[in-house]
Length: 150
Image (spheres, rainbow, N blue to C red):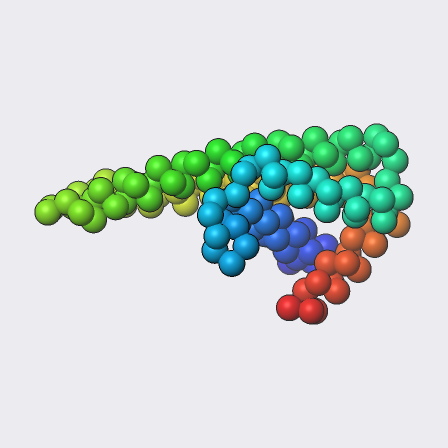
């Protein structure tokens, strides 16, 4: 796997994590967050990065479109996850859990997360095409710095 592919994969994973974990709860495990508030916070952070990159208005619009689409997909995925947890608890609480139903539920969740991860990867590839080589170098430097810090 090339370095560029590794960076795209890492970026995709980070974006998916940020989008999904933003719904889990407030700071320090507090109550659930308002999805629109989470979206606004992501938008502010993205706007800061796009300003740092000196992105054009067309680039900003295209990348925000990617963010909005991923956000809505992530929001649906989170809602489905809550339903899956409820179904799993129902199976757990049953005197005779249905192993086929449990495995089907696990398979469905894995497939849903895989599909979302592919959408994130596709969005990263689209962002790659939207940004100039110089902007991509800046993004790469930021990702490397973030990876080295953790």
